[in-house]
Every structure is written in C-alpha cells, then in structure tokens.
Length: 186
Length: 227
Image 1 (tube, chains in turn orange, red):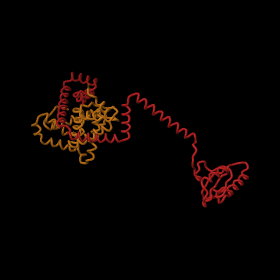
Image 2: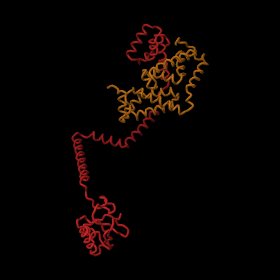
Image 3: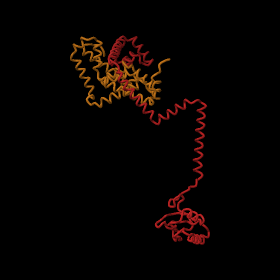
Image 4: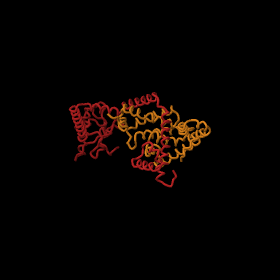
C-alpha cells in the first residue's frame, strides 16, 4: 500500500485524526524546523515556532483548500510566524544590517577563508547572506520549490522571485570574490 | 544576465530551478536546448548546481527538532482533542458515530420512531395553537381579551365571608363577569352580558346580588366608565 499523500493526511487531520498528524509531522518537521532556524538563527526558538506551525496546521486543516501544496502552506505559516516573532523582538528588526556585519566580518579575515575549501567558503557565504537572500536561496535549493510556490510563500510575484534569486546569487558571488574565490560570474 | 538577448537572460534566471528539477516541461525542454548550444550557459549551470549542493549541506547541518518539541506539540494536540470532546460538536460527533455503528434494520427503526415522535409533537403543538385551549384562570385586571366593547357595568364589593364557590355560582347565574379589580376598598368592576333589555336586566341582577345572603356588601350600577 502506498503512503498517503500530504493532502490525504490533511483531510484526516481536519477530522481530528491524531495518527495522520503524527504522519505529517514525521514527514515535514525537520524541513520546517530548518527553515525556521535559518530565519531566526536560534534552534530553541525555532522549535517553539515549529510547534506553533504544526498546531496551526492541526487546528486549521479544515480550511486547507488545496490551492497550494501542503509544503508551501506550512512554509508560508512558518515564515509568517518567524517574522512576527522577530518583529516582537525589536532588536532583531535590524537583522539585515546584522547580515552586513557578518559579511564585513567575512571580508576581513579573507586569508582565513582562502585557507578553507571552496565548499566551506560557499557555506560561510551562504550563512552571511541577508535574510531575504538566504530565504529565497533555501526555498529554491533546499526545499526545492518551484517559481510559483516560492512566490506564494514569500507573497511576491513570480517575476520578483526570479530576480530576487538572481540578486541573491550575485551577492553570493561578491562575497566569494571577497573570500578569494572568483567564479567568473556574473 | 544583462545580455542583449532577453530569452537567454530568462534561461539564466531559470537555471537554479533546472538544477532542482522544478521547471515546467516546456521550460525544461527550452533550457536543455539552450544548454546544448551555449557552453557558457552550461558552465553557469555548474555554478548553480554548486550553490544547490552547499545550500543543502548548510541546511542539513542544522540538525532536527528534539523529541521534547515533538512531545510538547502532541501534548497540546491531546489537550485540544479533549476540549473538542467536551464541546457540543464533540457530543454530536459521538452520537453520529454511535448511530453509524447500528445495523441497518435498527437504524431504520430508530429513524422511523424519531419521525413518529416528531409528527406527534407537531400535531400536539398545532392542535394547541389552533384549538385555542380554554384557560382555567385569568386575572381580572389582565384579561387577554381586552376591555369589553359593550353591556352594562356594575361595581361590587364582595362580603369578606363570601366563598369563591358562592361568587362563581352567582356570576354564572346572573351572566356577570369580572373585568377589573380589585380596586381600592376591594371593589370589582363587573360586566353584564349584552342584551336588548339591558336596563331591566341590570336592575334584576343588582336585586339578586343584594338579596344573596352574605355575598356582597355593595352592588351599584356604574354611572360612567371608570378606568
């Protein structure tokens, strides 16, 4: 027997099926958690937010209309909760500048970065991207969402998704150049 | 990007989605054709694939949520389930579930009995509404029929020793009905049933009331309507 689809699980959850909820959690908890960690940069807080996301799914499953995939729906809830949580903590409203600070930090010890592997340098630069840029990078490369799905999660037009990802990649190239790695692009 | 060829620019924008296999079939075919004829685009696809691999590595290094987070979530869910069970919707659901477990003949019998009960109730309610059931008691000052339209009126003070049975009997015999009171001094306003010889009848009724031993201490005609 094949595993039930996400949509099947959501229908059962809407009827109060706890087992279906366990199935959905097992399937998506890690991805939602990682998405949240990348936004709030705090695993403990990300766990709390993830719990809120799944509790929302439990309570609102009956309202899921299937206009998007279940993954897209959950990541949309997760992003909304993470941003709301960050707004509540005023100092985090400056997060993009924090990212700039990280980038500057990455600037200074260029020699250190040159010593590490290209892959390691790439990871550090990915970490140093602004929230906006790393979110679109993660949604496309790690969560493997299509253009329209990313547009739904970020609540922006599909064309903006493409250009935002382009600028994120361009920024990544800039950071890599500063780290001594020239990709010859763009 | 920023070439003079908009189609090539669009192809380059889509390379990350080509790298993750998330393009529409038509877009996928177009990129494949472009990659076959454009070595620089193919090189840039390699860059996107490198980004993809490291983005996956960064995310996978973040670990997984703890068992405590899972336990806390399902404790919340269990509490919510318990609350739902206590709600009216929970009761309705349980009734529905029990009905669903009944064998078809018993379910049909239950439905028939429920229908009969509903019909019986409907009949009783309709009969009570249309039949205008007679009330057994009505206060004189708050009669449902409103002020009488015609007839003669008298003012009466019943004797303290007069019994309810005596009063009822006298009212029935004389065709009187209480329309107001008691007022100050224990006076009631009575209406004499409307007849052609109302004045003669009024005198006869007054005489009869006054003659009844221990029934009234006062019985006089009302000269003008008093409200």
